[in-house]
Image (cartoon, rainbow, N blue to C red; front, side):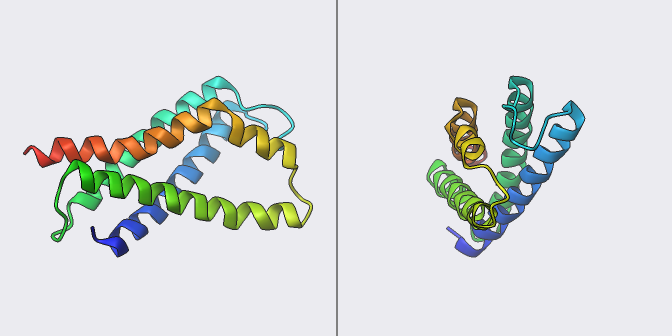
Amino acid sequence: MDKKRAIWISVLLYAATFLIGIVVALTLGTDLSGETPITKMHWVLSIILSVILAGLFSLWYFKGRKIKISQKEGLYLGLTFLAVGIFFDLLFIIPYLALGVGDVNSLLNYYQDPFFWISVVLIVVTPIVVGKWKGKK
């Protein structure tokens, strides 16, 4: 695994999915204050777009010359996507709460939502599928 490449691609994926989430929210008129729950339509659209982005970023990762294309490599990439996501979520959330800007309950509701966990699983599984598919060629 090319750790440096995987981390940079994961950072870019995190930024892209963050921006996509904002665009989806603005397009659907979602209340971003946290006072109302995120709609199912928002979740589904965000998940679909995130999986597409994860697939594209996985393809980009596998274009590296030093990369051995396989399911196992896809698993490592998916876990890197997850680790980088957790890191940046904590990096942004802890100061957000410490400053008293955010509502702890709305954040807990977000992270307890089954759609959130579906998106997490799919972000990890997508590079595995891409690794299996590209490894056969």
